[in-house]
Length: 340
Image (cartoon, rainbow, N blue to C red; front, top):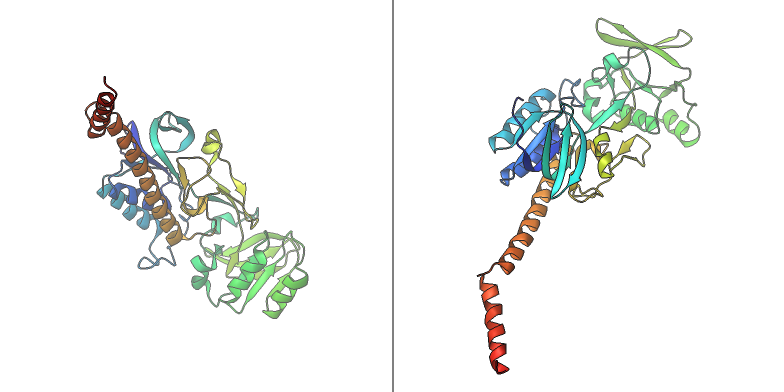
């Protein structure tokens, strides 16, 4: 991605994942000047394949993105490597600053920077992330069906995760780790579904032959497992929006933070849209791409409305426009009636 930046664009898209690329595709096909600024750290990079995406199920994430970049470029859009560090409003739009000192202007912004998964501090866990340490039953569940699955408590959705993975395997163990043992209705649900509950802090993962083999507790007990499910806290890559007055909010689920926006992607700041995981924590690739397409279409419609208003205003004030001539004729007629 060695393309050079122009001085300004109709739309700057910050983030080069599925949401950003699909938004840019819609804009480029609408003959908008658009650039995608891609920092190059896709959230799903560790995964072997994208799942749940019709006609592209199992495709490696890097291949999907490369195809998306090619499609954006086919219609005249740009995809440029760069990390955005700041954004500020100026006359007619926004100025976007990059980490390498470059700046670019935009009439509109589309924010699709996605999330960062903040994982539990368990030795060996991060190295297995996206492989046999998982989080989503719809993204990875089929691949671990009928295996020995562990679920590591760590957030408000942990019991829910255990129940979802129980649909895929009869052998599910819930590790309390540093959380209290589930009680009340949650304890009843786990017991009814035959999900074993293990108390005690998890000290490390056991790995052999580049495969997860078990979970080791602080007391030395090892529970054999083929896969481990965690619920990471999700944090936004959106610090650059602070200068525009846009800051993350805590998600109602308690799973992390998000950027509030309406169904079309409009944020609280006029001219700024968002799409994908930055707004919808649970969006898979297909949903993120769809949200990007919606936001791109809405941005184009917003620009069309602005350009139409400007055109009407210019026509009304043109010195020899039909409307100005008509008003002049009306004025002369009125003067004649009054004897002037």
